Amino acid sequence: MLGLWGPGTAYGPANDSQFKQHLAFAVTLQELFRINENLQHNGVGTVGFWGGRAKEPSVIGWMPSAQIYFRDPDGHLLEFITILPGKPRPGFVGAYSEWLRLQDVHK
Image 1 (cartoon, rainbow, N blue to C red):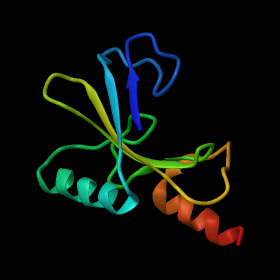
Image 2 (image 1 turned 30 degrees about the horizontal axis):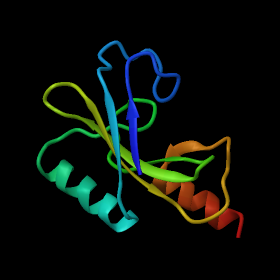
Image 3 (image 1 turned 135 degrees about the vertical axis):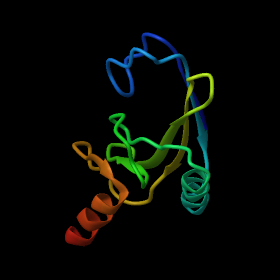
């Protein structure tokens, strides 16, 4: 999967005045956590779906998918994403740990 967003897109965080381009790359869940750990270790700030600082992947429930976002030195928004197993929950957007708690409740 490769997702490309550009200025004026209707998807993703709204009102991002520094938005240049968004590139998304599909990885496995294990790779997503390893990449996130490496980014954190190297001082690269990651953000969640709504643009706030995040130490863990965020989840978009309608897919469902887990992802991390960060900016490259030129300001482009980069994303690593994985499709999660399980039933979609269209109203959910939040941290991966919250998603796991939600899944445990509905077993």
